[in-house]
Length: 176
Image (tube, rainbow, N blue to C red; front, side, top):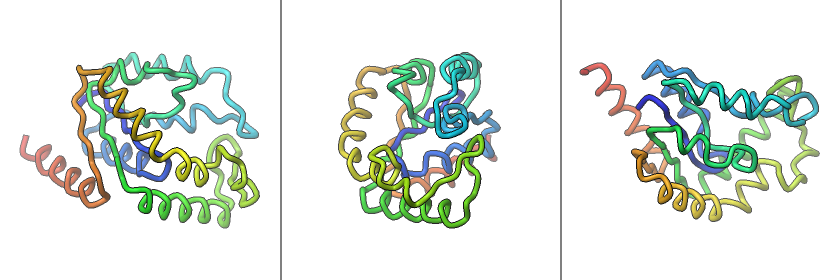
């Protein structure tokens, strides 16, 4: 695993998994939200070129997002996809909890942006997106896996499976 793409719907734990792989494998992590969002939640003009640059490197880990801009670039360049295919109830619990924490804390997310409760009515907000796109995301991920047979795919269907897989990876890494 040298070029790792973490797939899953909002709230599945993509960023958490990417951080864990960064720590355990020493992979450079690139957070697509940080590269994408400019001030005022606008798309940064250099987004695609930033992704092009890091994804041409021999080692990285990042989240599977922003297909409307990147298309299959990251799928073509990855060697491994970790697919967090968690149940809707799990991702909804997580995404609501996360959004509430961000809104109440007023924590800066990227480039001065902060989440507000009033943003939750936006159809693109992670809460609404996770609910409305859960099945569609599963379908498109299956399609992408089929288009990219060169990839090693690790499909994890629960938070427990993800924790056990990471624990086994950590043990394997120490024994190698």
